[in-house]
Length: 277
Image 1 (cartoon, rainbow, N blue to C red):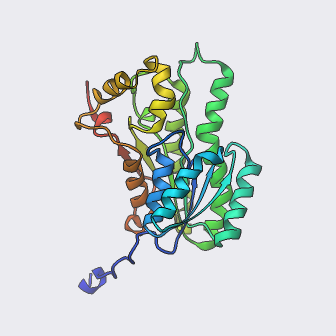
Image 2 (tube, rainbow, N blue to C red):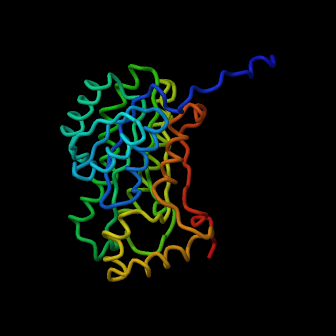
């Protein structure tokens, strides 16, 4: 190989400069760095124009403030990502505002406790819609745009619950997050020739606002400190990450630095999933 063939021009300042990023679940249930908020803000810091959607638009207010504080550009919309018509409407709104979609981040998700006996059938169905169908629908409406552009990057957010037991029975959540990973692999191969990359970030037990607002009530009677201690005990690294760690991994996969990476997963869990005890 000619040595000069390895000389590539440096990336432009801002790893997502000139790109439009569509981020679902970009709000947060409380103060702090949820995955979606952190992704929206981090992408904006790297030059992306962000179209942020959430089921509850009030949750987007702090995301907007942080993006604008960073000097970024953001537009928002209300969306129920389990409904095809709702997704189609906001995708159309994004294109009307920014002209294209270069990056799609499917971040919506949430867990429900229980195994197959104790879990209500309605809860199972809702988990399938919330965690897996939402990814399917967003890709259904965004992939044709990316295919027409002959380029695009999709980053799906899964969970280490889709890889292994993580401390509690949440069979629907675990099943759907495993499904997100396999969905990503299949779509990655199908659309590779179209110049579209599809990858997955697999966060572990992070300290996000969900811990304070919901998980502690479910698992430790509202004792946040006790829940954090339980979660930290499973993590080899001596600290717990937060949504910003998810965002850094998503940023890499969305950027041109990952131009030769598709159908892959980045696990962000402090080493938890590779423990053997």
